[in-house]
Length: 60
Image (tube, rainbow, N blue to C red; front, side):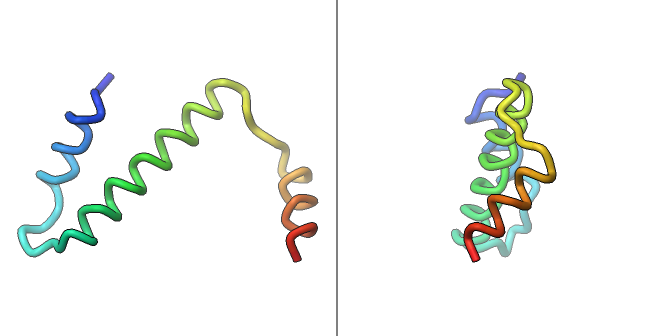
């Protein structure tokens, strides 16, 4: 498993040389959110599709 530093370095190496700070920060943010979601799923912290729909309906 990669360390956070290794994952960040890999992302930085993959972005365009013309990437802005905002572009790099966005890519890092997305990677962090994906990793967090995968960890939650591994830990069983998920909800059914129906439960997700109910929660969304409550927001509107």
